[in-house]
Each structure stands twice: as structure tokens, then as C-alpha cells.
Amino acid sequence: EAGVVQSPRYKIIEKKQPVAFWCNPISGHNTLYWYLQNLGQGPELLIRYENEEAVDDSQLPKDRFSAERLKGVDSTLKIQPAELGDSAVYLCASSLVSAGGTDTQYFGPGTRLTVL
Amino acid sequence: ILNVEQSPQSLHVQEGDSTNFTCSFPSSNFYALHWYRWETAKSPEALFVMTLNGDEKKKGRISATLNTKEGYSYLYIKGSQPEDSATYLCAFDPANRDDKIIFGKGTRLHILP
Image (cartoon, rainbow over all chains, first blue to last red; front, side):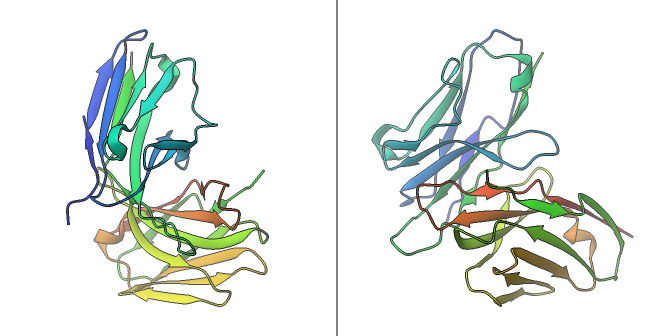
């Protein structure tokens, strides 16, 4: 079974430039997550999708960040414009959430963003 | 505000020695506790999901215990090997399914040859 795929793996941009990350979850997984992981910190949730619907985007800085999950499969996360403080690892995860079940998430390798 | 704490932050262990580290979490609103292993340049890998107080899970040389009443979980590694070098993350999965999973900052384990 293929795992969660993310691209690119690394991205270096100058501040004020736009950037986009792409995620392909595990086939059949209904829930998709984007996390931000700063150095020395645990992953912090940015947005959670159940199928196509964003059910928790309370931590997404909506002035510059946007996300979409078309057709309930792949997802993109965009930052426009990027700031120096956005340098971090952006992780995508997916899970198959069922009633009464636990939410074991399967992660991609992440995109390491460096903003200069 | 939910707080998930992991200790120690970093740990150096001689190859062949056994070690353990801690995850503490809220004792209320508990649904499950997850452990992940994250090797450098790889994806975080799910190790265990634990739901019942007193639960003990084992996978090879790695095991974990759970105490939901006092809000802690231990991860044990027996006979450490170089491939155990990684960051170990725990994640608190709340009973209120509208609340999000909260990750700790991780314990960074270095195995010394």
C-alpha cells in the first residue's frame, strides 16, 4: 500500500513569494490533515478535512494561508505571501476515521520550507 | 488549554542499554494516546495506539504502558540499537471528537555506538 505522498520535499523561496505544497493521501482515507512543525516543537494542526469539507481550520492563518481538497482526495496548501516566520516543516497526514474508532494518522515525509 | 508534555527532551543512550521516556497528558477528556517514531528525513511512523487504562503494547523491543487516571504513558526500548535513533512523539486523542489531537514536542533519542 502506497503511503502519503507529499511534494516538493524541500522548497527555498524569498519572502513575499507565494508557495504551494501538494499532498496525496492513502487511498480510501476520508480524513486529511495539514500540520506545521517548527524546530523543537510537535506538529500543530493547521487544517483538517473530512472528505471535501474543512471541519477544523481554526489554526490556519487565513490572511496568507489557504487550502483546498478537491474531490475529497488530493490537497494543496498555499502561502501567499510567505514570511520569514513560515520557515518550517509542513506535514500532511491521512486517516480512515470511523465511528467509535481511533484516529491513527499516517504521515507523509513533509515539505521543508525555507523562507529567505 | 490541553497540554501534552514529553520528557526528557533529548536523550543519549549507549547501544545495548535499555531506556524509557514519558508522555504526560490531561486525565480528563481522554480517548486514546498515540506514539509515533520519526526518523530524520522520513515520515513519522505510528507505533502504538492505546485506549484502556493499564494497557500495555509491545512491538519487538519497544513497549508502552498507559495510565489514564494519572495521565501518563511510558515508552520503553530494550537493548537500544542504532536504528532506534529518532524522535518519539506522543499524541493525545480527546474524547470530544470535535477537539483536535495534540502532539507533544517529542523526545529525541540518540543511540551511541
